[in-house]
Image (cartoon, rainbow, N blue to C red):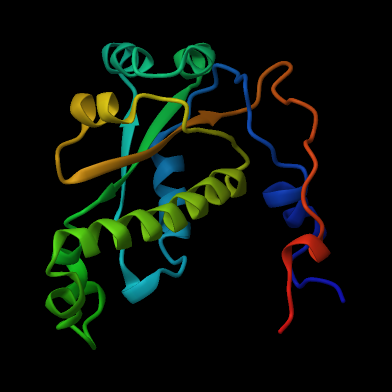
Length: 196
């Protein structure tokens, strides 16, 4: 059975796409980022939650502050990428639920009145949205370099607040010279899928 999505698009989004480690200096515009978001915002989440928050790091001063919190091996990539995004979960996402879930506005208080429940839901659904964002970056013809090698608490204190939990940092741009490591193996269908 073949997939409906054009094979070229399949390659762009998945088979040929990999984490970029170097980038050209071609800028990534706000218009490109808005187009990415306007596409990926339709990705499904539980209760139509939208807990993902994106902080675009553009200024040299902010970039320097961020690089200090990156793992040593990630610092050169974050220093030179045309755009860096901090992806975080908003633990107060439930305030938006009545507007996002108008047919069930009581979900806000029924399921998410307690902070621990919100934090768990925010982490899961913002991670889903982060994955959609990475696919959206690829759909824009750009490369993404998602990284979790960082001081999460340092990034939170430097760029966010107590209501936001950083998930990852994503370097974004056109791939540069020697951008890719060799493709690593993946698990087979049989290793992953079980039928009961």
